Length: 147
Image (cartoon, rainbow, N blue to C red; front, side):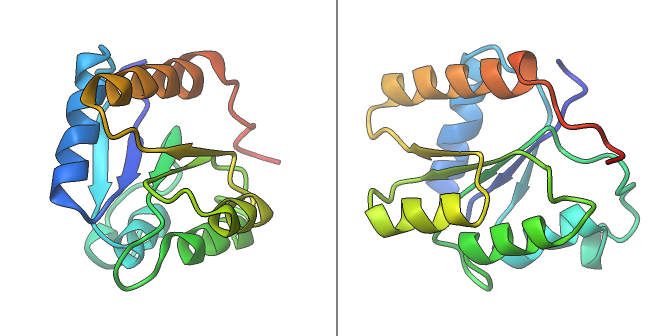
């Protein structure tokens, strides 16, 4: 499980720290790469900008994607992920504080694999992180890399 990277796309430093802490507390020792806005997330995934030297054949196991991001919002990121053959099957979990029905409809409509509301309570957040980690890093069988 340790070689599977998690891409966390989160602009709020408090939510970033909380997510990383919750994953560690849940014994998820995977590397967490953090992108602080939508453009940085796409640069990481497609090996552009500051990530131009990254091996783009090694995709994260899962993307945890906030919706409210600077430069390019989460739905814009998801749209680009699903539009590119290299990333169209990449598991994307929307991890957000939004409980707006339209956000859920749009997220699933654009191909999100899951929509998880960030729990306010830390213990509940840890439990949610543990479940996310168990499912996406252990139980889920990823799509073949060549389709």
